[in-house]
Amino acid sequence: MQHSHLTTLHAVVLALDTLCQDGTCIDQLLAGSGIAPADLQRPEMRISIAQERQVFRNATARCQDLGLLLGRRMHVSSYGLL
Image (cartoon, rainbow, N blue to C red; front, side, top):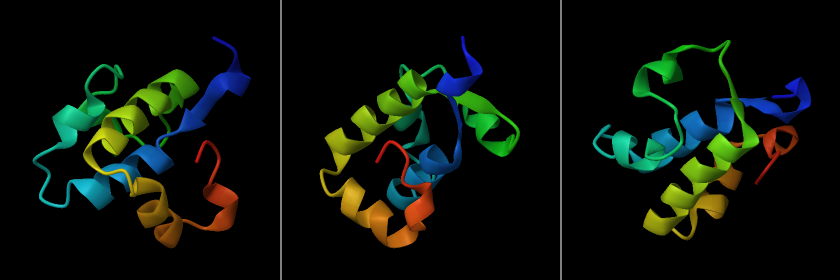
């Protein structure tokens, strides 16, 4: 895997914080991504764009307005995939 195809967990964590405020849906949103809940506590961790996309596919299935919700919470320089 090339380094240029890796990203941080920033957007994933923000999506989980937005949709899973009580922590109950984290496993469902991470399903199929290869990201473990424990990985969310590792700020140095890098994930592939494909892993990030899987989380966002799962998340948008729950909330089609996710992009708008995250847009309110993210700085413009953080948008990346979104």
